[in-house]
Length: 275
Image (cartoon, rainbow, N blue to C red; front, top):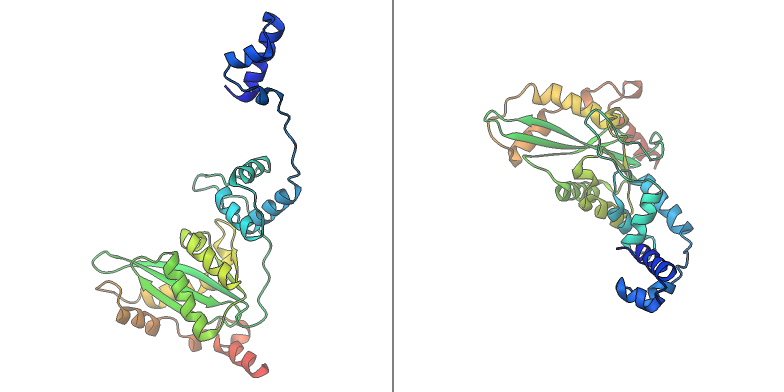
């Protein structure tokens, strides 16, 4: 029985059977202090607003991971209180069928205006001649339209994505923001910790809306059309294999789909001259 049900049973015993409160509490195995306890309402306003703000930035996080994010902002509330407010605000991430998509709770994105303002990430899948799966991670600068990295392997998880980004950051500098879909490699703990430690904002597209990640999706299409569909890979991924994909993939100087028909290197070179 819940404490509320036990209190009600005690009141019934006292009113209808003329039993003392002490004896009635003993019959329902409840301490007297529980009977006279008065709950003190707590102001959950700051926690409620902070929780809604974090849930807007992280639309696919459940209450446990939102509790971790709130701890980073200085909130010391336990996970049970966070869960109660989480339910009251109806922030649950519902598991829907494939054709349905979750409601987007993020902010609208703007077009980049300079180099390293935002990088986009995405995966391309293919198979070798013996049927082994290939997974390619592509990283593109949204302003210069350059492909900064192509990582090839049979499996690439969140930790591997973080390692690839570390290599690109060491050679090119740190981006202000990352843009990706809601795949487990990008929404997992590894990428969340990596972006938080480096102060990089990680943005996510609406579920089921790949066109919002247009720059990397455009590159992925050209990579498949000009490289993967034109070559037959006999073996699994190796360093030589990765280098071959980079060499035979879309060449930046041959692309004419950027503004004013300039190659992707032109905006980057122009930006460097201005600096």
